Length: 231
Image 1 (cartoon, rainbow, N blue to C red):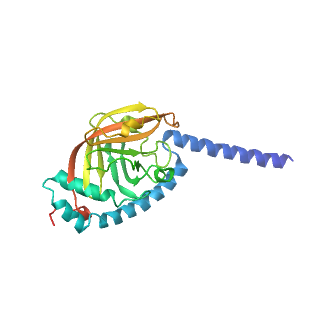
Image 2: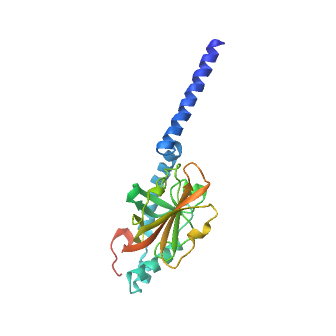
Image 3: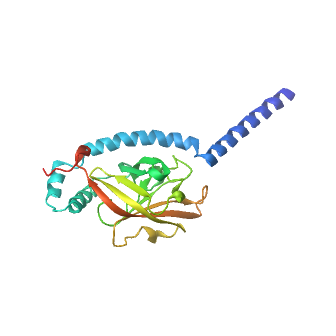
């Protein structure tokens, strides 16, 4: 009986240490198990994004865009056409935020399964280049925790979205804490802006933290990341 109790005690202590280690890792960094899963999913998303970039824009897309006289006009046409081909759960581009050392693939959709792969683009909002609000959600403690340090962003910090048709640089305006029901923060405001959202505080979904950024520059790329050339 004593031997059985010793074995049981050892097993319980070991299990407790594993749980404590997982909690400690989550507090200091991010939840390790889900992060491994998300890393695998991000790798798949990288491959899918490369395939998307090889297919969009097509020659027909470029011909349509060439009819516009300005860079923003060309980008708007390609963004509109891009919106017709994207699918939920699939990658659409990359987000880079140097201030928080973030460089990951963005997924279309904010469903549970979408956010397990990476930050997710709200499908009810516009795509970069359409002149409206672009909104992206992300986790702060699980699945790579891409938006863990969203609260570190300050006015003027750069946020870049690299889409298959162009690269967009936004500058942070402010961050705000709002309630989960504050859906108005992703509504259009008359100019192109980016809204990044995540749960707040850490380890809680009681609130939302939102970072707002305004579009400042657009660099045009055609298929294969080559600079624009009229077809």
